[in-house]
Length: 288
Image (cartoon, rainbow, N blue to C red; front, side):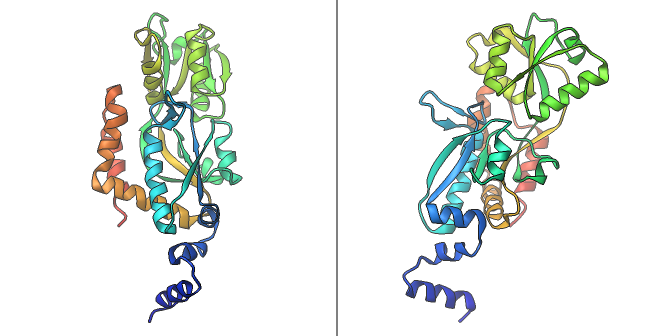
């Protein structure tokens, strides 16, 4: 009899659930979840269509659907049903709440980059986007150069903020920056004419337009100012939990289920999966 079978037999004799008890040996996030019976998901409140609140104030979206696939995989690993607790996060709090153990999985619109990997880790790429500008169609703004003498809202602590500020500095432009907490505040600033533009990942801008009362008044303009691969965020130095997440997403990619999930959230926006994203799905499906 193998050591693993012997261990399972001994655990069962003690009245312990073998999957849960074995998971205790993984340490870190899995132990935390096994002990509490609860997995804590960090979510965004206005990152349409990735993670936002629906009419019932429940978190929904593309990233939420993918995170729930990870939750199912964790539950299977532990051999127990799990309660999902949702905690709202924003660009300024999401990394800190992951690093300090408040949330177990972040399901939003977060860019994976090497700087952030000093504090957190990421699962495989789930979307590819980049920074663009949202403005009124009659604003005369068509690129960063047209922001000279204008005001732009930027969400604090984002890769978009850094990209826009770098482009503005490189071009020697005089631009007034209004720091905002999140996308909803940025859009409100534009709708109420406090600023002339709001800049963030282009797909989020299309989502903001779709939720506007006057979508016909707005347009996404300019070249990409950054390259932003999105991924679900997990705790750093926790390979056991990270592996479960990778395996769960690999199965979603490999089975083709990702196509239905993508269509559910992006077809209404008229945003097809571009070749780069399709390649990312294929790469994410390779582990077996």
